[in-house]
Image 1 (tube, rainbow over the protein chains, first blue to last red):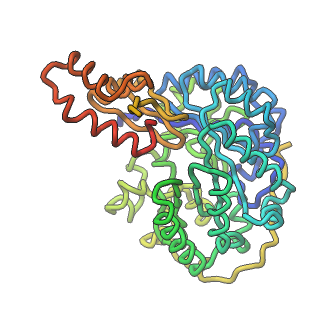
Image 2: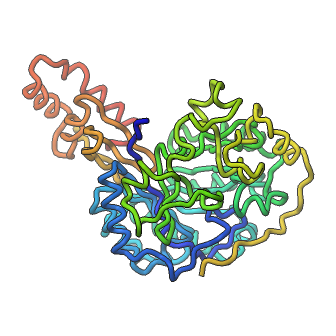
Image 3: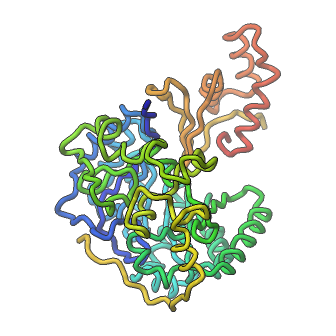
Amino acid sequence: MTVQAPWALLAELTHGCPLRCGYCSNPVELIGRSRELAAGQWSDVFRQAADLGVVQTHLSGGEPLLRRDLSRIVAAADGSGLYTQLVTSGVGLSERRTAVLADAGLRSVQLSVQHADPRASERIAGARSFAAKERAARLIRASGLPFGLNIVLHRANLDALDDLIALGLSWGADRIELAHTQFHGWALGNRAALLPTREQVERARVSVARWRELLDGSMELVWVAPDWVDVTAKPCMGGWGAVSLTVAPDGTVLPCPAAAALPDLDPPNVREHPLAWIWRESKTFNAYRGESWMPDPCRSCALRTTDHGGCRCQAHALTGDAGRTDPACRHAPDHHLVRDLVQGPRDEPAYTYRKGGT
Amino acid sequence: MTWRPALSRGVVLRHDRVRDTDLLLLPERVVVLRGSAGPVVRLCDGTRAVGDIVAELGERYPGAPVAGEVPGFLAALRKEGWLI
């Protein structure tokens, strides 16, 4: 099988974070700060990634601003020819830091926001953070860098969607990504508090359509579909080992940030193997690449070329077998698992906050 | 005022040596510039008016439908927000 070159690299610079969101995309087993790659090692990763065909990198975490050497890391990525985007909670961004990062070659910033109401936002994040986000938004806007907001949607903020979009407008965002919670890792443990009702999702969908008409392209609204409610498998990562790769803080390389939870994957590390070998040859990256791994009904389904069989981490989280059809899909033999949960009871938010990674 | 096309802030034109093609890199997006789209965008440096770009390309590609196609292409990129 010909292996296509990857386009994007998610660089998890640290798993440390001042926020403790109950849907964090980091693995439940967080990597401690003492095991993080040094800036020089990241520099080598970016050079190898660029040689492999990567053109964009998302500098993420945890909270990447916790890295004191972040501007060196940005400069190394830019120097390798990668387009750099900072993915941040905004906590720790100062005017000086913004200027230093822009000078180092930072091209754009994506800021997370949890809710338009400060108290609700901080309840979701499990930390005082709203004032810092407001300030970060002002600094990013003033810097002239392209400015995106990232909002993870769930039961406790879907009804505030109009306020959230209005907040993005008042903060001067160029783009808002509305991403429904993905239910594996931390979010699976908080499923009863996070899972929205169908009615909430449908109201939000109508609202987004109305805003798009109103905005007429002046601000981009991206809607990342709720796979459980839509009973449609998501085209996770554009396919396993197809478009993107994730490098964890300790140098472990994964096809997606959640894949650390899969057993027997034995993910390779940049400290031990060249990135090109990891991408093309490693067992990890070939495990679910293409279509030959697919079980029925995927292997004969017309959807397989668009959804690539859905999410392996979700299949594992719900069935214990990462090789099964994603249970979010209405055609999956295990779809009843998702259906029962969507139809089942909800709890009032009492999150199990993220902990560890220090 | 005469429009002198230039790339918007945050939009980067880059030659992809692995895929041997020109790309526009944006936040969350990569646009593959096929055919002579790359050389056209490369002339958008804020100093040339659309007429200058058409004239330069006309000299470089004699017989190509430059005058008919390039202004519309540039306008489409401006509408996307990639050119200012």
